[in-house]
Length: 113
Image (cartoon, rainbow, N blue to C red; front, side):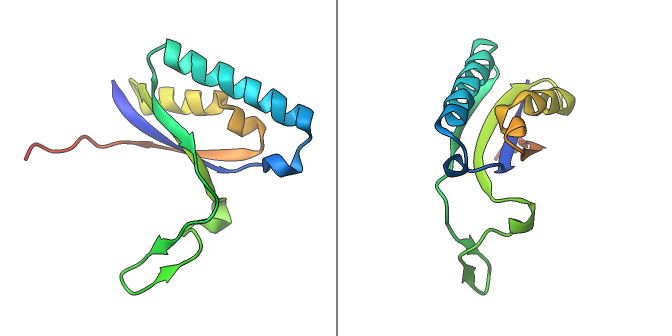
């Protein structure tokens, strides 16, 4: 099995949804994460706090590099056999129903030192 990073971008902020929508969203997330854990596919993941900084060689800015694609609001690390399987997991993620997008990247193993 390989590890894949799912970067969750954009989406409708919780403050712009009703209490009922937020409750339904949390229930969907609980079921989604529970299913991944039960299948042994969940390695980790958490939401991120707004803000932060981007560090370059010559300066530091108060905005993300890819702000036009949506700010990264969270991440998941999943274990699958292939990129295609990781993409299917991303498609089933509640973040997609919340008008977000998910970048899926394979995590490279560390070379022997």
